[in-house]
Image (cartoon, rainbow, N blue to C red; front, side, top):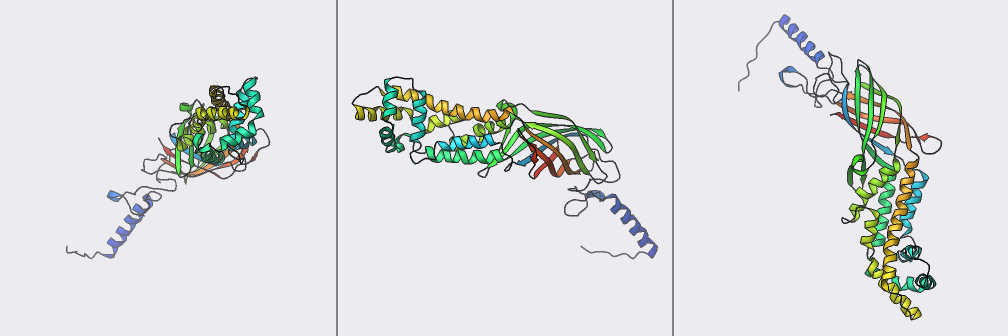
Amino acid sequence: MNTTIKTFGFASILALGAAASGCAADMVGTGDDSGNGGSNGGGGEGSGGGGTTGGTLDATGTYKMTSTFDLATNVPGTVGVVVNDIIDATDSSDDPTHWVLDQIVAQMPSGTAKTLLQGAIPFVSGYLNDRVLQWAPDFVTTMVQVGSDFGQITKKFGLNETLAVTGSGSTYTSTRTAIGAHFAFDNQTFDLSFSAYNVANVVVPNVGITMDSSGGLAVADHKMPLPYGGIIHMGLDAAIIPMVDANAHNLGQLLADKIDCAAVGSYINTAISNQFGFSVGAGVFTTACTGGLNAGANLIYSKIDAVSATALEFDMTGTAQAADTNHDYKVDALNAGKWIGTLSYSGTPAPLAPATFSGARM
C-alpha cells in the first residue's frame, strides 16, 4: 500500500492538535486496559476510576457481590470443641475401635449384654483392632480429612450477596442481603445457597453509601449478624462430606458408610463368646452400633447448631472503586472492595481480620 504524505500549513496543524486534545479530554477514565481507544474515536472499556467523564455516574441498581472473611483469630470457642469431637474418633492409638465401643455401650440398655461388653472391653477392643481393616478400612483417614477441612471452613469462608442501591447524585441508601456461602478448600470451590439448606437470608436494610466524583465508593457503618452454625453445618454436609464420600451427604451417612456395623456386631459377639462362653447374638450389638453412630453424629450437629444461638456479628464499613465499563454513566463493577471493623461472638468485639469484596451489576 502506498502512503501519501500531505503537507499542512502551520495553522492547520494547530487546529488538528486542538481537536485531538478535545477528544483526549473526552476519553479520560474510559480507555481500555491496553490504553487503546474504542471504535469511531470513542474510548474502550474502562477497568478503573469512576468510569466515563462528562456526565454524572449513577450507582443505583442491584449488584451481585462476594465477600471473603478470615476468622482465624475470631472463631467461636464452641467451634473448636466440634472440631475436636470429630478428631476424637481418630486420635487415640486404639481408635476407631475405642470410639465405636463408647458409642455402642452408650446405646445399650442395662442388662446382661451391656454388662458383659463393659467387662470385656479391653479384650473386645483388641479383637476388633486386629480386624479393623475388615469393618472400617479407611475410617481414620476419612475422619482426619473431614476434621481438617471443617477446621478450614470455620476460619475462612465467603458470602454470596446482593446489594440493592437507590438514590442519586453522591448519596445513596442500600439493602445488603447475604444469600449464600462460598467455601474454598483442597483446591475446590463451592457456592451454596442458603435457601437450599434451610438457612435464612440475612437482610440488612438502610445501609448508607456515598460516591465521590472519581468513583470512590464508601459503605457506611452497619451490622450483619450471621447464623454461623447454620453456615458451617451447610458446608460440612454439602461440601466436605461429599468430597470424601460421594455416597454420603451428612455425618450419619458418612459414619454408616465407613463403619460396617453388621461386621462389628458379629465380631463383638464372637469376642464375648470366646471370653465368656456365652453368646447374646450379633444383632444386639449391630443395632447398638447403628444407633451409636447416629447418636455420635447428632451430638456433633447439636454443638454446631448451638453456635447459631448467638449470632456472629460483623460491624463494618467498606470502601471500593466504582467502574463504568460500557460508558453508559452507570456503575457496572465494584472493584478492590475492603471491609474493616469488628467481629463479635458472645463477648467483646475483636478487630476484623482483612476482608475483601467485589461486585458486578446484575
